[in-house]
Amino acid sequence: MRRMERDLSTSQIIILGFMALILLGSLLLMLPVSTRDGRGANFSDALFTATSAVCVTGLVVRDTATYWSGFGQGVLLLLIQIGGMGVVTAAMTMVALTGRRVSLKQRTAIQESLSAHSISGIVRLAGTIICGAVIIELTGAAVMAPVFCRRYGLKEGIWYGLFHAVSAFCNAGFDLMGREEAFSSLTSFASQPVINLTVMALIVVGGIGFLTWEDVRTHGVHLRRFSMQSKVILSVTGLLIALPAVYFFFGEFAAYPMRQRVWSSLFQAVTPRTAGFNTTDQAALSSTGQALTIALMLTGGSPGSTAGGMKTTTLAALAATAWAVFRRREHTSLFDRRLEEGAVRTAATVLVMYLTLFLLGGAVISRAEALPLGACLFETASAIGTVGLSLGITPTLGQLSRGILIFLMFFGRAGGLTLIFAALAGRKREALLPAEKLTIG
Image: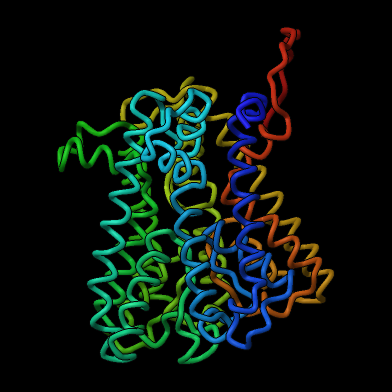
């Protein structure tokens, strides 16, 4: 085992960790005890559901509440928790807690899993993150449980509070509301302030990134002392909540009663990045509303968080680069700090990868299933952004289309660059080639 670990790159360790957890989850979901009918899920349903849970997406082919038994739901919750915290982070922290020495390779894997800048103190940071996550999830569960208890009784109310708190914090989007109506998500709580506020808070806290937590813990409300990355994350996150909320309030939900209008607008702005709960019917949105939701899903959360997508920092780097070009400046800067050229190149690469797979996947599914391209693009954006919002077509898709969504979910959670680096391990020396100008634009 030690020799195999030495031969693997950190990217390969992360990828294999996700794959092993998905396979284990699939096998557990195929057990007769995992489904309410006592037959167990077939491999296709189990693989899709396990991938969605580990990749904290929320796209489902079977309603979680009515198809999976209590044991099956428990398996899903465990997969969501480990997938949200990062397979490598969770595993290595458990190793550290047992007293075993964490090797340099393992520390590097944790660093890459958390998107941390330094390996110094990384095991302590991982342990702090996991303890903090448990405290936040239990707090969210305690806040929501009374609301659920009044509707479903004490035992189920507590379970519902815990399940939805973990699912929201991990940006997973799995819900147990199918007993109200299949695949209904939180639509029956559209005007309930406790559920709306708690779920939104958990989504945002889980999605801003663990390194931003560390800045908040260290510096409190002294924003000037925050790192440039934390400032970027908080600024972009705020803008991507406020501006879409204004559009949804005046555009999509103008006919709603005022209370529901306010809550629905805020929730619809928060959930596409990248939680997957919904309090309104996504199919009822206008084409403009769906396009805006797709853009938010592709953007996703922040690095080193429970969220997927291209990340807020990618969007910020690209926008800042465009602004620098408009101003004819040589360097890209944010908050009076110059961005490294490698960061800009990486941001452009991530954008190209996400857009290519999003468009190609949607086109193939549209062709294979004879469905409108717009609806298929909504599903592929949801998958690659690890969101889970759906126009309702995912349960009807064939095996080819399911396979595409499985790959996109895995790509979105593991990280496109991590997959590429895992496949192309090693760095070759390159000769410095002659330069020649290329006209752009």
